[in-house]
Image (tube, rainbow, N blue to C red; front, top):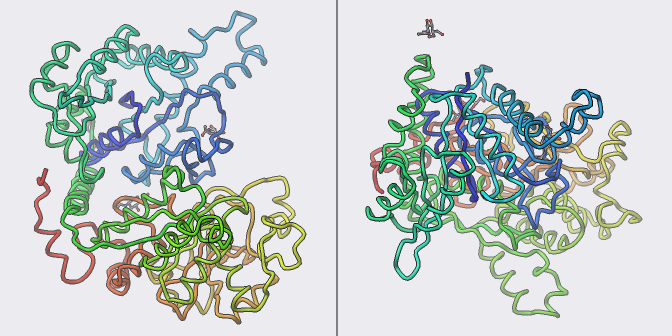
Length: 588
Ligand SMILES: *[C@@H]1O[C@H](CO)[C@@H](O)[C@H](O)[C@H]1NC(C)=O
Ligand SMILES: *[C@@H]1O[C@H](CO)[C@@H](O)[C@H](O)[C@H]1NC(C)=O
Ligand SMILES: CC(=O)N[C@H]1CO[C@H](CO)[C@@H](O)[C@@H]1O
């Protein structure tokens, strides 16, 4: 039996993934499911400006961005089955009804939808998620939305039934609630009301996690415990931390591990010695890496030049990959969000202040990043940013669209193809350096997008590559993709003559995956999205190299990575190793 932990939360799943991490450090195999009470069947069609980024899994599933948190914290690989939406469940039940599976009976939300939810969860919780290929011991089910929403009701009902079915030691309910401070007073009323609502729906919380800006005082915890009818120890306080990566430590310090062990009778689970050792090692690494955050004196300033910058969640995985890398490099990440349109000459006319501010931010940054995106808007600004980075030897990382604009920039300003552009921006253009995938490979004609994990081979003669050095001697790497346009192979010869080397291609040598400039501290473009595979304890290499180069410590980091991933406690740059080793993790 997989132990189920259901977490009701309105906010991002930091508490849920932190809880998962604590269980993982005990040697348990932990999986997770995200349940979203909206009717969309597919996250891929949702607007990034409204919902934040679409997260892409190895199997090509386009899922809710919260699944990314679990992959990053728990170092696991989830599948598209791990995201459940109301739309998907209804779709499933309606299809069964059409097939006659219900023998003409009336099909209702209770029990048919609620049963389908439970079956789905029980099935998905058993899918192996790590390299042991074994069934997980624990599955965390994160329920989005708010209690009281009409949309969430079938899920709450399903959880209530699931709890009964799983039995006492096999189900834990955590309720995450926000405790605001109003006029200097911590208000517990909203929490009390929310708990009342879930209780009346039949879902009794075992733990109440209170999110708050400052530490809850004893009185507030007592009040919650009293009015919500739980023990004092069942109220966990999750105050804002200097870094979200310190939330696991905060939970551990409040005795969360013994509490989880007691409620879920975890001592009855047979954990192998090797998993226990691995779990302990993960905890040591985690603390060494994240505990020292506030002591980082040096900053690394990165300009993110994108088009959806109003909502930072649109680039959540990019931001996380930068954070992981900055922690590894023992630098404070100073990220500047720059709207690429502000870099364009038309903005100079309409809003000179914005134009000059944006250029000031780009020119004074230590590194320039152009992430993925779709459509033409703002791309001229990105091309200008890539040009600046190339000419001024500022470290550059171009991801997906960011690689494509670097290719166009090179064609225009180095190879003299002054009208170079992308088929995505202008289908009629004479010099389309970037073309629709289908123009190369007729077989993908039907598919609108190349998604998920695909191999990239480093090409012969690319041994000098700075990126390749970080992959520690590998000749083939696997990264996740999400694109429909790619570099036009007809121009490769001219571009390479101009100094832009295509050092990584797909297994057929048809698709261009990685470009790099040799005569530059770090100028790398990748067609894939390396951010999707970045892990807290194992940062994505293209991001790590980029941040390290921006911070001026690429050589040190590369030396450290020559034999694979150094563990968090093994330190990074020479000279600062001892700092993080001797630091105590109980700073907070
Ligand atoms: C993460 O998981 C992979 C296998 O999926 C494993 O090879 C790697 O060592 C793990 N990384 C860490 C830091 O535990
Ligand atoms: C625990 O697992 C090990 C190896 O998987 C096995 O040898 C042992 O008998 C198990 N112990 C219990 C109590 O199930
Ligand atoms: C909303 C969402 O991300 N849906 C995906 C979840 O998984 C199914 C398959 O089980 C995909 O088809 C959806 O794209």
